[in-house]
Length: 167
Ligand SMILES: NC(=O)c1ccc[n+]([C@@H]2O[C@H](COP(=O)([O-])OP(=O)(O)OC[C@H]3O[C@@H](n4cnc5c(N)ncnc54)[C@H](OP(=O)(O)O)[C@@H]3O)[C@@H](O)[C@H]2O)c1
Image 1: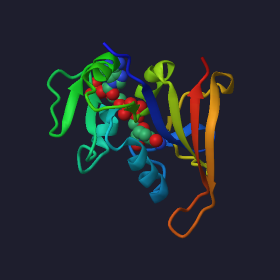
Image 2: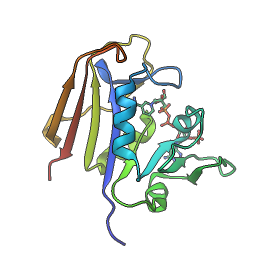
Image 3: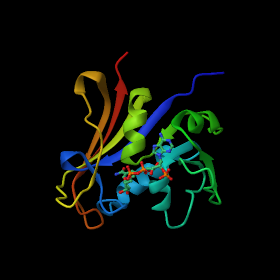
Image 4: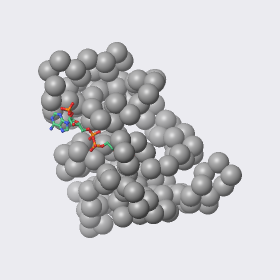
């Protein structure tokens, strides 16, 4: 079978923080728009807790794949997988397969990720309880970086960065 390109996409605040209380750390509409633009038309893979945090269910225009250990879990709009390998095998949409979190799934998937789309959020969240694994700068080449100031809709400065694994 043709090798699939694995990507991950994540928004990371200072100290590697990515979540709090089962949800995101802040509302950053520019990042949601960026996330949609990058992932639309592709398969996206997420942990069951991240799937549960999506109030409207699966994200439109994408194949939503959820990983759970439960053999009885079903949710409309989701393809259910029981391991990362099963999830990647189940991906049917063209192009990159996107790992979209959360922390458990990022930690398991990161060794297989070729391209990492990071939104760096310049803010500290002292109540964060979920973190991205350390990104070793020796392992990645920065392909692009796009810096933005805070504005009336986006309360913190942020940068869209694309990293590619060194081969
Ligand atoms: N900042 C960002 O870009 C971003 C992106 C996504 C998520 N998040 C945040 O991250 C947090 C959620 O992350 P999390 O680490 O708590 O949960 P998670 O990774 O979303 O989901 C964990 C669940 O995935 C399943 N799972 C994990 N490893 C598995 C394996 N090897 N085989 C089978 N199933 C497996 C288990 O489901 P079962 O318990 O059902 O077995 C486990 O409870 C939330 O706060 C969310 O908002 C942030």
